[in-house]
Image (cartoon, rainbow, N blue to C red; front, side):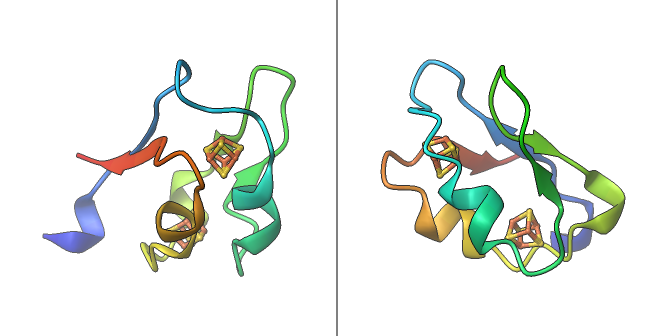
Length: 61
Ligand code: SF4
Ligand code: SF4
Protein backbone atom coordinates (compact mmCIF):
# COMPACT_ATOMS: atom_id res chain seq x y z
CA UNK A 1 0.00 0.00 0.00
CA UNK A 2 1.22 3.44 -0.94
CA UNK A 3 0.79 4.88 2.54
CA UNK A 4 3.20 2.31 3.96
CA UNK A 5 6.00 3.00 1.52
CA UNK A 6 9.37 4.01 2.83
CA UNK A 7 11.43 6.77 1.22
CA UNK A 8 15.06 5.85 0.62
CA UNK A 9 17.77 8.30 -0.37
CA UNK A 10 20.78 6.87 -2.17
CA UNK A 11 23.62 8.74 -0.48
CA UNK A 12 26.01 7.84 -3.30
CA UNK A 13 23.79 9.44 -5.95
CA UNK A 14 22.62 12.44 -3.90
CA UNK A 15 24.42 15.68 -4.80
CA UNK A 16 23.02 17.49 -1.71
CA UNK A 17 21.26 20.19 -3.66
CA UNK A 18 18.46 20.11 -1.01
CA UNK A 19 15.88 20.84 -3.67
CA UNK A 20 13.79 18.01 -2.26
CA UNK A 21 13.75 19.79 1.11
CA UNK A 22 12.56 22.97 -0.64
CA UNK A 23 9.80 21.35 -2.71
CA UNK A 24 8.24 19.20 0.02
CA UNK A 25 4.91 20.88 0.85
CA UNK A 26 4.73 19.49 4.39
CA UNK A 27 8.35 19.84 5.59
CA UNK A 28 8.83 16.07 5.67
CA UNK A 29 12.42 16.45 4.49
CA UNK A 30 14.89 18.36 6.59
CA UNK A 31 18.40 19.58 6.04
CA UNK A 32 21.26 17.75 7.71
CA UNK A 33 24.92 17.84 6.81
CA UNK A 34 24.87 14.18 5.78
CA UNK A 35 22.04 14.95 3.35
CA UNK A 36 18.26 15.27 3.49
CA UNK A 37 16.56 13.58 6.41
CA UNK A 38 13.08 12.11 5.99
CA UNK A 39 10.45 12.63 8.69
CA UNK A 40 8.20 9.69 7.99
CA UNK A 41 5.19 10.70 10.07
CA UNK A 42 4.85 14.01 8.22
CA UNK A 43 5.12 12.53 4.73
CA UNK A 44 1.95 12.27 2.62
CA UNK A 45 3.75 10.17 -0.08
CA UNK A 46 2.91 12.82 -2.68
CA UNK A 47 6.19 11.97 -4.50
CA UNK A 48 6.92 15.57 -5.39
CA UNK A 49 10.43 15.10 -3.99
CA UNK A 50 11.22 11.91 -5.88
CA UNK A 51 9.84 13.37 -9.12
CA UNK A 52 11.90 16.50 -8.56
CA UNK A 53 15.27 14.95 -7.69
CA UNK A 54 17.61 15.75 -10.61
CA UNK A 55 19.73 12.63 -10.06
CA UNK A 56 16.91 10.21 -9.12
CA UNK A 57 18.44 9.56 -5.71
CA UNK A 58 15.04 9.16 -4.00
CA UNK A 59 13.25 5.86 -4.31
CA UNK A 60 10.36 4.10 -2.61
CA UNK A 61 10.51 0.65 -1.09
S1 SF4 B 1 16.86 16.53 -4.61
FE1 SF4 B 1 17.98 14.59 -4.83
S2 SF4 B 1 20.11 15.21 -5.06
FE2 SF4 B 1 19.03 16.96 -4.24
S3 SF4 B 1 19.31 16.74 -2.01
FE3 SF4 B 1 17.36 15.76 -2.56
S4 SF4 B 1 17.90 13.60 -2.83
FE4 SF4 B 1 19.79 14.76 -2.92
S1 SF4 C 1 6.66 12.40 -0.78
FE1 SF4 C 1 5.83 14.48 -0.64
S2 SF4 C 1 5.42 14.75 1.53
FE2 SF4 C 1 6.78 13.01 1.38
S3 SF4 C 1 8.83 13.85 1.64
FE3 SF4 C 1 8.39 13.79 -0.56
S4 SF4 C 1 7.58 15.81 -1.07
FE4 SF4 C 1 7.47 15.55 1.14
